[in-house]
Structures are given as C-alpha cells and as structure tokens.
Image 1 (spheres, rainbow over the protein chains, first blue to last red):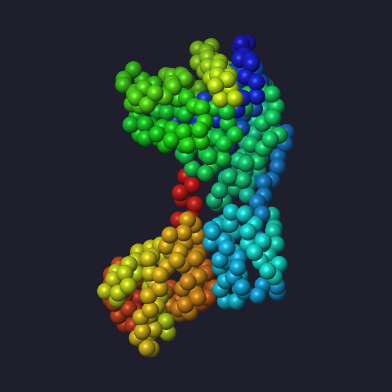
Image 2: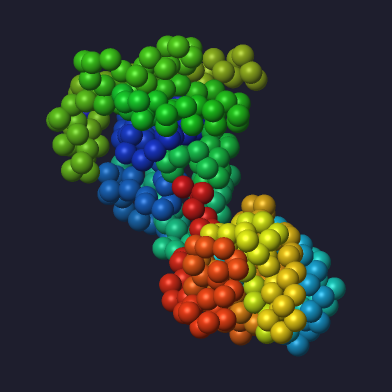
Length: 297
Length: 122
C-alpha cells in the first residue's frame, strides 16, 4: 500500500449518492475510505451491497435484523375492525369473520396493537435481513443485506447508521442506494455532507437533478463529483455551472481505472495518480465540512 | 347473485376500469333484481395497499363474483378468502361484460400479477 494517508477528518460523515445506479457511488465511497488514515465504510445499498467486494474484509460480526409485525389471537378478536380502519398502509383486512394480516405491507408502526380494545394483537419478530461487520486494513466495513422479496430496506439502513457505528472519531463514508426515495433519505439524514456523483450525459443531468433537489430539501451541504469525464462537452458540468453547484472533483473516463474497478480493485491503492484524485477530494471535503461548521454551527 | 365490477363512471355504459385498486367506483349488480348500485372506491387515493382495501369493499358489499381486467396477488388472496369468484373482464363497457358473463362467455381470471406495491421505492 502507498504511504500518504489523509488525516484530520475528525468524525465527519459523508454520504455518497446519485440519481441512478452505475454512476460511481461505490467507486467514490470505497476510495475515499481507502485514502483516509482510518475510516468506517457503510454500505446502505442493501438491495445489492457490493462495497465489500473491493475491501474483501475479514468478517467479525453478523446480526439478524428483524421488524415487528402484528399477529392476531383469533379467540380474542371480536371483529370491531379498529385495526383495519387505523392502518394507513392497509395491511389488515377483515374477511370471513377473520382478521387477515399482510406482513409485507406492514410498516411496523405498532398502531393496530394500540387501537385493539380486545388486546387480540401482539407483536412478533420478522427477520428481513442481516448486517455484517468486517475489517480490512484501515477500514471498518458495515454491510446491510435485505432478504430477497422484502419490500423496504429502511429498517436495515436505520440499524446500519445507529449511533454506535458512527460515533468513533474517524471518517464515515455512507454508500447510498441509487435514486432519491425513502431508502436514500434514511441513508443521508445524519450525514454532515453529501457527494452527488454524476455522469456526463443528459440522462446523467436528469438523475443529478433528482438528488440535487433531495439534498436541498434536507438542507445538507453538498458538492458534485463528475465521473467518467470525456474531452467533449459535459452536460452535468454545464448544469452545475448554471445552478452554481460546487464541483468537487472530476474523474476521467479511463480504461485502466474502469478495468481495475471492475476487477474489484481499490484504484487508489493501485496507482498513485488515482490515489491523488481521491486524497485531494477528501482534503477538499475536510475543508468543506469545517467551513460548514463555522458558517452553520 | 351479486356481481362487482370496477368502473370509470357511475353508468352501465361506462368502461370497465382497467385498475382494480385505483378504480373510482365499483358497480354492484344484483342479477335477480337487476339493481345497480355504484359505490365510491375509498381506496382509490390511498398511498399504499389500495388493492387490499378495495378488496375489503368488495367483500363487505357481499359480492359473489368480481369481473376485472387484471388483479394483484394481495387483493386476490382477500377475495379468495371470501370465496368470491374472479372472472376475466374484457376492456369494454360494463353492459357488454355483464351480457358476456350472463352468456357464460367470460372465463375465470388465470393470471394474478405480483402487485404494484413498493414499486415506487426504487
């Protein structure tokens, strides 16, 4: 491994997001963690977590993640339907003199249990996935995996970003799911700074707009990393300039980088010129976050 | 026998609504009395679980038969629990579908789709 490592990141939490998959979120996240003296990398893309393929960590912990869903004692249920009417997600129906519960529609709010006058409803655990913790050199890796067929990764992301995983005094890089929906909101809500990764196409601009609107809505400080940059005009860069959006870094469209990355290598550990791209990006982030702390304490 | 149909408008000339859960109204047609009763679908605008909630309406109105162009698996499981027979409707007027059903020209719905729930999460 090459020697120079970025220090002084404190415990800043950087979320990396993009409007669609394949723009380079994991490339940026993995390499930022790799060039930091010490870092925590959290893979919140629980539907297809792949950051661990780069770190090849030694796994040291594994935990099942469960949500609470209601179960009914049919002997106690008198068919009042308070629960059916209460549920905003319509996870319950009353048919043929029996309460029927749709587990995968339930959002685990627990409301049905509160409104049941007969105390016929109780909670039970339903395992929806796992969290794994691993170590690879200077990086601690947390990976969430949502079981196939489960509709929402939010409870796993919530657990991944729990206090104990974030509190240590080192850089945390949060590799978000693609898009701008609930799972992304859950992933960025505690971040100090958001990096939006964008591709140099019109489609890339469309996707950049989505996450740009999201981070503004969440009032997060943010900047853009332009990935796969060519010599030609870059519509994403043009959009940033027109909207006064800070461009943090430009990563070239580079065959060698692409090959290394697709072979599961951490490019910053392989070549000094790539290491420079990510260490200067991280140094820039340190300044941005410090500046933010002064302006918006 | 009571037949339920998701409809676009409160009329027998209305087209069958292609969506079940999000249909604006349901027609409940009593075969014996030839009475038509149009009920507002209170699931049409809910954020999630529309098929399930709409199926509850069909069950509560004591329909024996449902004519639909397509149906999701959650709604189907509610209707099946209530022993409601589900037939494949044609993309045509309510009247035409009722006539075809009476003439035994409609077949039972075979394909139940996996539902649209959660699709907006990605």
